[in-house]
Image (cartoon, rainbow, N blue to C red; front, side, top):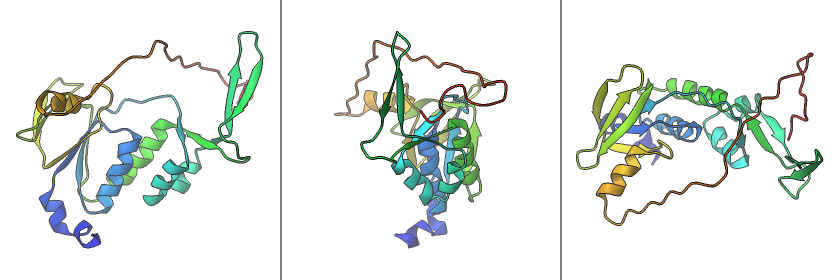
Length: 212
């Protein structure tokens, strides 16, 4: 209830840790902190260059923490994608059947900055950068973090652990090895991903249509 969320007892009673969150969990972190729950965040803090495509569902979540207008200032609406064939011909493919619909491309790094700054405004939120979660003791609710710069390790106890540490999750690995009926499967696709850098024109403009 709202009474529980706003209670100082909640803040004192719970210690919540999340491992290496991206934009998705950064948003959850803001939500937790506005409810009076103070998560401790262990984060690697590496920049990712590729833009993030945010749909109406993502904007709704950002609106709930008061950031929708701010992120729209850095957003580029994208109504569809452009396909390039080997002969150099292009085909525009809209994302939606409804005219006017679009998703929004925005800087992943800037979005994370907005979310981290907003979370940092709230009482009790602790941010720790360059910390990689390397292990999780489920039975003692203790996590091991290694600092990527110094190499030093530390153990932290928590009442609640939220694993958001990606494809190579140490938390998921610990659960797989220690929990009955916990199942997980991972496989790799046969093709790769390549990011192309297309420099701006001499006047600072886009060389291609920016909205696709």
